[in-house]
Image: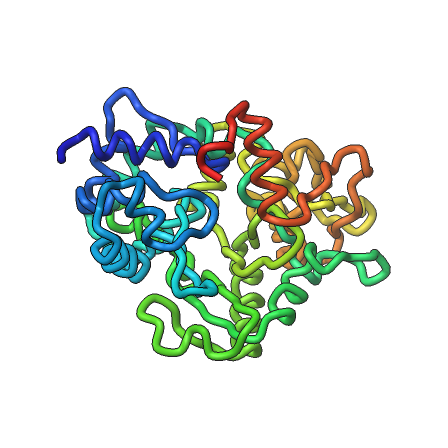
Length: 360
């Protein structure tokens, strides 16, 4: 098995709603070869988005059922495929590239993988993964930035997402780890990505994730707000299981805005910043905090460009005069958030013009 097996896997991944576009250089094949052994790639290329027992996958791949089961269990341990317990035992499903198996490669992230990932992100420049609709991620505003008298839905509130879980963990941000390895790191905290689960004890003994309490998760959330990181999560309302605390310099999603000029790279929150002109002293603290060009200081009062504002609210804690806050965007400016990840995938496939018939 040579390059062709990785090409088949790449095509399979690009057939998912998330996407995995090809490049002229073929760096995506070298990236897959770094992550998957050839026999793993061949098996993954036969997986579907729905969960199946190993023998169904084995039949398509031409592999003995026992061998397929052994390999799939090993791939699940490395975060290469989805796994859960079905009625007759373990069942397996295809995991997209982003958000998916790439984020699970923290234990194996080295300079070679980091360089391949960086080349891939630069060559694709947000194509397919970031410029398709609905976006993969959405912004969740800083809680204190939203006035108390505004109605905030649970999926719009980071604290509510954390409190809805029964297990909590924190792991290193793979984007900041990757950029450090290519010599382009930043000073933001590395251990900052929060993960949750609806059952207790999920992260005990996890090799990637440090198990923490709900109180520790809330404290990490506050810390990331203070240093100016942007809360993002999956672009659907129900069963959010993670909150990424993103920097615009390293985050593969936010770089879509700051580096690749893809306006649709992330779904904005349902809010936008407004400045109370009478209270603003023109110190420029909010302008410095905003990395998306949404705030400027043409004279002595900060001005908001609503078209560039993500509604993240990181500018609000930076203002010493409390002259800036979030307000609701007009309803016509806020596309409805898909209710579930399945609904998100159906909308995304339709927007990309791809059929999910074979892969689902």
